[in-house]
Structures are given as C-alpha cells and as structure tokens.
Amino acid sequence: MFKYCLIWSSYSRQDSKRKANELLAEFELSDVASRPLSKFSGGMRRRLDLAVSLISQPPLIFLDEPTTGLDPRTRTQMWQTIRKLVKGGSTVLLTTQYLDEADQLADNIVVIDKGRVVANDTPEGLKRSVGSSSLHLSVKNTDNTANAAQIIEGLLDAKVHLAEASELIAPMVNTDKLTDVLTTLKDAGIALSGVSILQPTLDEVFFALTGKGSNTKKEENQNG
Image (cartoon, rainbow, N blue to C red; front, side, top):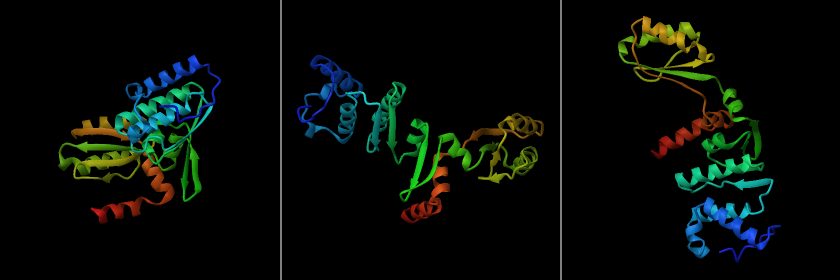
C-alpha cells in the first residue's frame, strides 16, 4: 500500500514498520492494509493521508478540512487523533467550515471572510463578542406567561422575548441570578417545564461577523 509513497524518516526499517502498524491500527485501517489504494473509500483515503503525514511526528501539522465527507464515527475518531497530536506537543493549523469542529478543537480561531481576517480570538472570546448567555424558560401554564415575563424582566433588568406561547428568552449577563429567578417564580405559583442557559454559538458569531445570516435564511426559505 505504501509502495507509491516516498517518506523521509530517521526510523530504522524495523521501527518504521512498527510505527506504520501503530498508525494503521489507530486509524482502523489494519484490516485493509493490503487492499489497493484505488479500492479505498473517500473517508479511508483521508485517514490514510493523515496517518502517512504522522509517521515522522512533525511539530507543525497543516490539515485542510480533514473531516469533510466523513461519517460521524470517523469524524469523531479524527477529532480524538488531533487532540492526541496536540497533547503530544504538535501544533495543528486546521481549516474547516464546520463551526462545531472549530469549537471542539481550537484554542484560537481565525475567522476569514472573502479572503480577509475579520476576527482572531479564543472560542469563548468570540462568543462573548456577540452577546451574553441567554435564559430559556418554558412555562407549564400559558396563562402565567405574561406574569412570568414581568418577574424575569424585573429581576434581570432585561427585555424578555416570547419565542412561543409558553417559552421565554432573556439575556443573562449574571448567571448567579438564576436562583433568584427560579425562587421568585415558584413563590408566585408559576410552574416551569424547562429551564436552560445557553451561550451564543459560533454560528451566531459567524453570522454577526460576516452579515450572512439573513441571506442564508432567505435562501433556505426559497429552496424550501
């Protein structure tokens, strides 16, 4: 399988074979090691490409959209391998269009739009740049929605948005106030069916930085 690859390495022949077998096992390619490359699927080729690049354990690794087209299981496995590389001391420069992938793997994210750098920060820093966390509450009895909104606005000093008949959303700068909100609602006899605090997502960051959110939505509606 490797006869078409030229790899410069300081390993001895025996060590090179051992290293190759270790990488084949890590990327779950041992069972197909003797299969012609032309018979490999797209996902298998991506895993093989990365395995070959790691034989010499480089200190700097460039990965260009390494998980594009991979199934969820193989994608998760690739994430684990990348984390292991970083833990072992390698620096990984990774390009991706999957924002959840950037959120999972990156210590620092550079957002590029039309060839121009529009942001450079940690994932948490980027999320903070578009706003605070938000409180999501679902009221069991819709008759209590207006009263619940009034209580929340008074405690959080923030405008409450009514997402649905029973779902309230409000910005929450200080999450320590959650206990006060829940206690006051309970004392007022307002029962809840759900409570969560959500951070802004990197999708929201991207839309805020590039201004593409509304256009994307329009395209989705037209296609739908």
